Length: 188
Length: 179
Figure 1: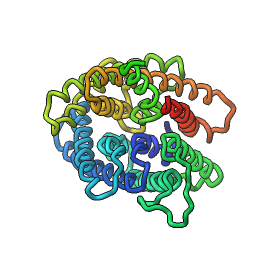
Figure 2: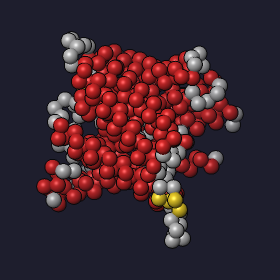
Figure 3: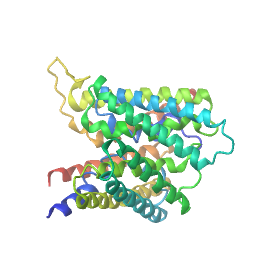
Figure 4: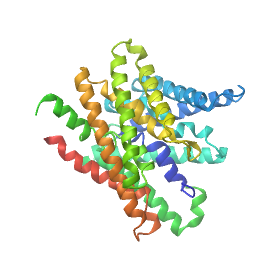
């Protein structure tokens, strides 16, 4: 997987697991906040565990995964109180804490700059997916019907096929962009 | 068609863990490199997932609701640990343990199966999910293999083609929503 673009890594590390939470923008924002929260807590726990000498890798990773999962489950329970989250998205929000991107801070040979850029790309992609799937799949923005009377019947974009299509398009566009403008590779 | 068959087929097609519910999408996008090599790995992962589902569903009924997440986590980690013990999914992927790619499947499948009220239907659902996962794993392995040896430009190979293939399969499975 060496030489893989950052966007592609982020798609695989985070978005593929959370596709079910990108049907609307509020749900995508909830997924974003939950995975960020889980990542922060997992990073703190990971740093603390470095003070424990000779902790076996299996135990360390089991603890990290447990922490990520626990945080995401708790935050997912709170999400519907704050955001108009769809009931169908709840399982994905609860599982957000075990997406590999949550443990990016523990990844080998990953610099802080790389982590921050990856999270920036992740947030941008998640928001884009939520916005476009809600707009073109449901004809709404943040749950509000578009007042122009322009109703978009592209239901398939709210369905799994739309999620895969948008994600594939994002990766392909990035690859083509880097092919024609190689300097973009450092950013995306 | 009786209820059990219906639940089994739903688990395999309409609620396919790769193309429809995304729980195994990461594993399928990352792990299979060819159709021939993918079969055995797919079966091992599917068996571990099936057993973790059954254990999860059985245990969830015996614990208070507040402890349910612990059950899903425990059975998921045990399934992942068992795979590692048998030498599967060793090593790293993008600097992280490779086992992370199957965790959403191992923790998510028992959770989804436990939404069924009866143990028998949960078993049928898990069996359908596992079989659906094996099919998807081998199919995507075959696609990756044929794309790798094709003359397409490198920009179109691997991840984009895998994601577009998944889109087409999910479209095909959507057709079963109305049977």
